[in-house]
Image (cartoon, rainbow, N blue to C red; front, top):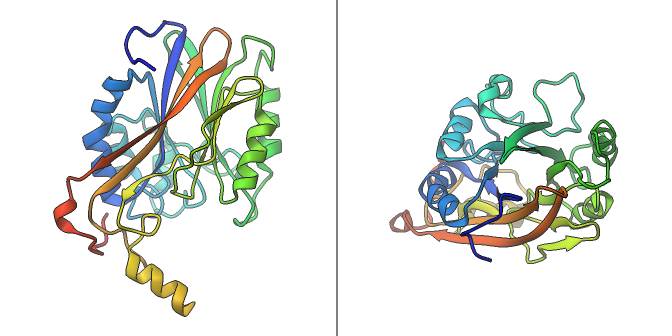
Amino acid sequence: MSAGGASPEVIRVLAVGDVIGSPGRQALRRLLPGLRRELAADLVVVNAENSAGGRGVGVKTARELRDAGADVLTTGNHVWSQPDVDQALADDDLRLLRPLNFPDDLPGRGDCTLRVKGRDVTVVSLLGRVFMTPLDDPFRAMDTLLAARPGGTAAPRPLIVVDFHAEATSEKLAMGWHLAGRVAAVVGTHTHVPTADARLLPGETGYVTDLGMVGPRDSIIGAAVEPTLRRFLTHRPNRAPVPDGPVDFNAVLIELDAARGTCRALRRVDRFDPTDATHGAGTRARR
C-alpha cells in the first residue's frame, strides 16, 4: 500500500500500542515523526495507559506524548494511578481520554472528535470487564454513544475509531463483531503483545485484537524479567520496574474511507528502536 498520492477521501489513522514508561516515550519521540511522514498519517492515536513509570499517565507524560506527535491519548484500567491525572484529563489541549464506560460523574471524557481533512473523526477509549475490575458494560456504553450520533449505520457512517482496552481475546472479538458495520475500526490494547489478525469485519469495520506495545523488548510485557519471574515462581507480590534496553514499536495503520465512514484496509506497522541497546536488560525504574 503506497503512502504517496492518497485520495483526499482517504484518512490514515496510525493507532499505536501501549507506551511503556520512559523507554517507550523516548522511542515514540524518536520514531513517530518519521513514521508519520513515511505513512502519510493524518491522525495518530496513542495508548498512554502505562506511560508514567509503567503505570498510568500524568500531566508531564501526557504532554511528552503529545509533543512527540500523538493527536489523541487513550487509556485503560490504570488511568487513575497517577495523582495528577484529574488535571491531565481536564486539560483539553492534552486530548487525554479515560474509558467511556466509567461512571459519568468521574473526571474526564471517553471520546473526542477532531476535524481531519474536513471530516469529523471520533476516537473512543473503552475498557473491558473480563478478568478485570468490574465496571459498567462497555457494549451498552457504545450502544448509547452510537444512538446519540446522527447518521447511525446508514452510509456515510460517522467515522469512529474505538480503542478497546481489554484482557480477554474473546471479549475483544465480541466487541469487534458487536460494532461491525457500526464504527470504522476497533483496535484492542492492554496485553502488550501484537496480534496477527488485522482484518475487515462485515460492514467494512477494521479490527485487530491487540496493537502491542511501545516498550522494552527484553521484558515480560514491558516489566523487568527477573522480578516478574519471581512473582510467578513464589506467588508473592513484588514490584517489577520498566527495564532499559531496545524497544519494540507496535502499531496499526488504518485507512478510512471518509466519504462512506468505513475502513478500506488496515495493516501492521512494527518497528524496532535499538537506541538503548547498550543498556542491556537492566531494571532501573523509569519515570
